[in-house]
Length: 325
Image (cartoon, rainbow, N blue to C red; front, side, top):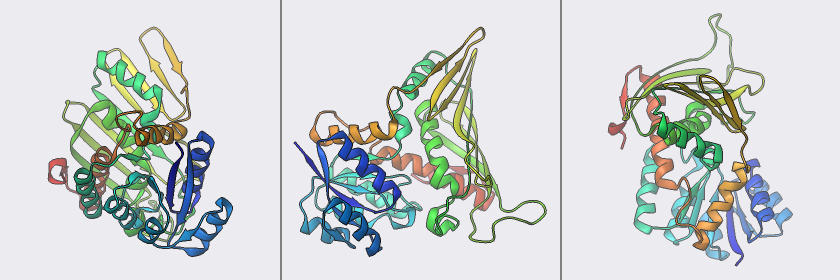
């Protein structure tokens, strides 16, 4: 069975997904939709499929089994709702939205329709993340430290919080999702952000903080510090460390290191998680697996945590997660 994929978004992320899907076999793109028609036309021409600027029109014109939504944070909503109205399986890249209003609405519709969903939180597809969780089941974590130390992406919308949501929502969200996977649900956050440097220099475009630090308390009793910066010239590192009695773990996209009192072990991923996340979505759509690792409802909970940190950094007040649910 070859699944027909309606692609919404024609940027680099969409191109990566379509390359993976075609490489896996058993799936092919049948349409490309992008609000920027030249981008849609360019990718559609490469794939030899029709192009559109409206997702509803695309789904009415070309039969599809599933919809891939690969758009910037501010553009989420129309494509997801169009897919859900037509009962299509739905894959949504992270972050799943800008704020909470549209995302919560989509989450309710996902529950009502019961369609298969998947999201772009591919870190959970790491077998090393699964191993970390197994190790922590034997040595419950007390403390975690996560970070995303990077440059500012070269797209004009990224520096505006009303377009990207800020670095916590757009980038650190992978680490937040991994923290939820390993430590459980967060219950309260307090965060602070800074823009510019003490001498007053810094980017003069947009309003995104150059650095953010957050303290998060989890229902399990564990506490975490989470940090992000976009002030570097190149990406340095993104990872999550956990501390248990007698065990320290460092998990990143490229592997897991476990530090025991008398030894250190390293584990490399068995499969590229960016491939695994697409493969598992296709399997779920075909009915070969019950669900994806991070269906939309699970991604929504991670997005609530990101929005809580962003809200706390903006207001200077602690935020309880139950206030956002």
